[in-house]
Image 1 (tube, rainbow over the protein chains, first blue to last red):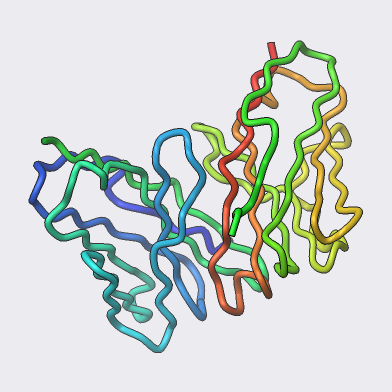
Image 2 (image 1 turned 90 degrees about the horizontal axis):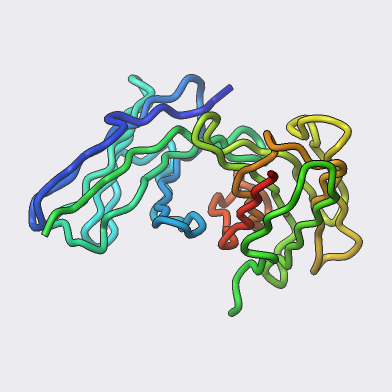
Length: 109
Length: 116
């Protein structure tokens, strides 16, 4: 299985602070994706980083990928209350995506 | 664009009853996935369709579960008979080309099933 594993399981931060979460995976990949899930909602794609990329930015999101360590990190800068959600990394295995257990982020006002 | 549409959003039923969950993927997408989400097991892929054909149903728990995709704009997931352990949120997702190529799955809002 190429399921990613997120760390930490849960994170509580103050509004304005940065949030960092990590993902480790098991086998070679051609891309890694991050998704967000707000409570009671479906998953929303945030960002995709390809295996030949080391870092990617999208607004307040920064993703890194280290294929030698089989790990990725997601950084949310200047967090807002609206960032409260669960964040999942996902790795493709051919046509399908395998998801980790997720990191639950709570942003306190 | 309406996104992936699932119905019903919530379903409460009694053990032994038949449950049918419905999904309308995004127009033009040729890949459709059914996932199940529980606290204990996280997100599990149940079945994958490509061009309306089931390609991988290895994640379907048992014969009580069945899925169909009669055309490119509609899919159903049926549980018959339902059991309390089937209680979960069931997600439908669609994409063009599958996750391994361009990535990005588009998820519906899910159907929360409670079996009493």
